[in-house]
Image (tube, rainbow, N blue to C red):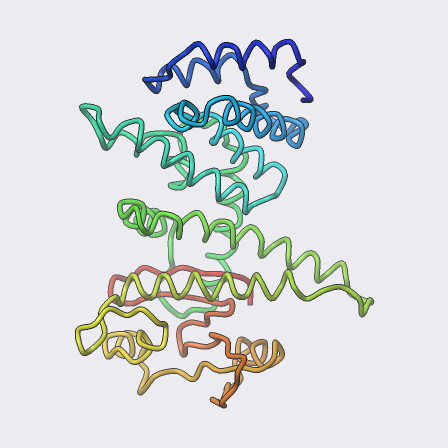
Length: 323
């Protein structure tokens, strides 16, 4: 390990073997003793700190799987999420942030206040809580800046009443209340942050014909999946009363077409990335049979490949990524 010398690691495993970890407090006490932590005001060796957390957790799991599962691990998961954001490894940040909240829910579900997990740092991170100190404030600031830039871009082109941070916070709060939808929020933040990385990569590649398109293809698919998840949330039932399990069913739902001012279901097939790009740029994408199909366009208000989403039924609007 980088921060913890071997004698301290051995002592930590011995300590772990002797404690039952029947309460969350025992887990919190352990991680207050045997962990590298993180620096509040600036990033300092995030890779080394993250690696030490990961290695310590793995050693404990190998020592006693049952006790490991019983142990409260909200603190290390939260710190690992924070460190992953410092590393700009947003997928790991997403994974461990969700794991943090799951641990907090498990910690509070049998207490006198089972809803107190909503006041824990992991949930406050998703709410981008401002006006109060937060140990991961620099990561929150990064998400807030990305969101503000996207809102400014969207508000400038939408022709609709401006979307404010308060509207976004209300939207996020509602999704967090539904535990099956919580991951959508963290995935949306990760998508926003990664969009700036993908844009920078394209800018730096200018003048060169090399480089893989895989990161950008995966990013587009992520945006499409996010949009599909949100549309299924807002339009869960089809006209015949069945659950909308596919995006095509949502497109054929009357309430969806009415909200978006559509005369019929949008065309959605594409064979190449160029066709998707042209559709995002505002050109018409025709339907054609193909073994390779992609979710691409919803007009006039949204595209699943990277512009905007705003269901008008509750005036909640989200800007997904840069056009």
